[in-house]
Length: 334
Image (tube, rainbow, N blue to C red; front, side, top):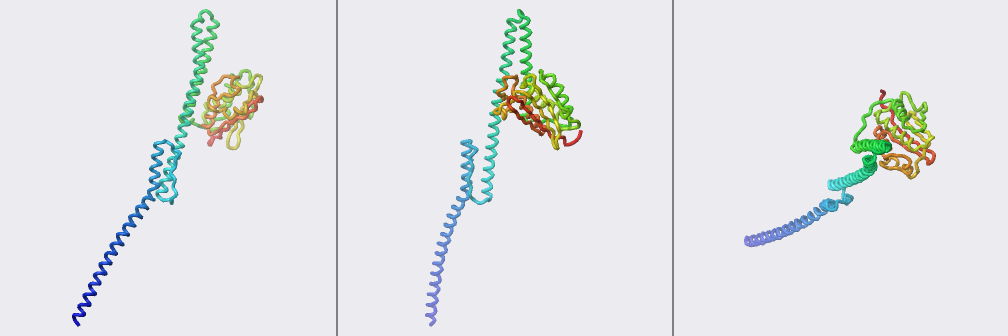
C-alpha cells in the first residue's frame, strides 16, 4: 500500500512539473507575443504621432528651398501640444508672408520714389545747364538775354530747392518721424496762412468769412506744419483757378473736431483722377495748366494724419474743388 501511494505521488508530481513546464512555455510565448504586439503598436503610434512633425519638417524645408511663404502645414488631430506647435508654425509663416509682402511693397515704392525723383530733378538741372551754356556763349553780347537766363536759372534752382525740401519731409515721414504737438490757437494759424496766401494769389480773390476765424478754438498740433497744410491747399486752389476766380477759406468747430474748408471756382478734378490726387508725384489731366511736382497734397495728407485728422477732396469738373481738413480739438486748454 505504501508503494502504491508513493507511485501515485510520483505520477502526481510529474504531472505537476509537466503542467508547470507547459505553463512556463505558454507564458514565455504569450509574453513574447505581447511584447512584439506592444512594440509594433508603439511603433505605429509613434509613427502616427510623429507624422505631423515630419510634415512640419518637410514644410519648413520646402519653404527654405522655394522661399514660398504661402505654404501651410495641414493637421487634423486634437488640439494638443503638437496641434499647438503646428498652429504656431502656420501663424509664423503667415506673419513672415505679410512682413515679406510689406517689405516688397516698400521696396517697390522706394524704387518708384527714386525714379520719380530722378525724373523731377532731371528737367530743372537740364534747363539750368542749358541756360548756363547759352549764358557762357552769348551772355556778354546780350545783356537782356543774360538777365533772362539768370532769372530762369534762379527759378529752376528755387524749384529744385522746394522739391528737395519736400522730399526730405516725405523721407522723414517714411522713416517714422512724428510731429511734436502742443495746444495752439486755430485762429492764429489761419490768419498767418491767409496773410501769406494773399501774396501768392496771382489775381485770384481770397475770401475768409467771419466763421473762418473761430476765436478760442484750440487744436493739438505744430503751428508751422498746420500753417503749411493750409498753405498747400490754398496754393493748389490758386494754381487751378483761372482769373477772375475766387478761393474761399472757412472753418468751424464741431463737437469733437474742427473743420477747415478750402473751396475754389477753378477747373475741377476729373472723376478718374480724384482717387489719386494725394498720391506722390501724381499729376492729373489738368496738371499741364500749372507748374508743380505732385508732392504737395501727399505732404498735406501726412501732416493731417500726424495731427490725428484727415483731408478729403470733392470736385466737379468745370465748377471747382473743395478740400476739407478735419482736425481733433485739443484735449486740454492752452
